[in-house]
Length: 150
Length: 121
Image (tube, rainbow over the protein chains, first blue to last red):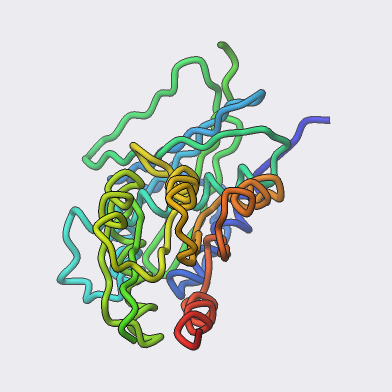
């Protein structure tokens, strides 16, 4: 039977947003592609089953999550704050997902890119989960890619 | 509290969150390092009474920092704050010499409660 990770991802993100940001998160409808991402955080889980976790945030979600996590006014949030918070959120999602998987597995450091019309390709990996979520600030996504080639 | 606390994390966000909790718990004297290598240099500068460290960092991990600090003969409390939640990883950290462990995500209250233990010590 094929393993699915979407409910794990949903629960992990809900736990992070509730405890660290004081924000509620719900599963979005059927159209996560409608989310216009301007910040992408990526982290890799290495081991027998290598996978990559990608957190995709709209500019509004990125700003609000940064403000909430750092307890700052929205107007004072800088692009450095946004990148750093997105990296930490990605790190926590990847780390918590790793802890649910059979090991030994290793977690990379997170990387973040920001911009418009971001394309995303992870060579040798296929998309296995695309979890659309929504918080007060709008929609966002978490994608999981599984390595198919060495 | 006059204890100097060394906060080690490659994430500036996490350092801010931890320092905020430290201040709320009564710790005023904090120093920061962005990785284990920088932290070891700061520690060897002297006077650090508590270390709070992440695990996964560039240059030197929190685990290697712990081993290095213990190899120097120090018994300073080392508190690890990390996403590494698997039992095997926790055991590895304890064997390396950590004193306490908190997995991310955490609530501000949970972190503060842990820190208040050290404030009373």
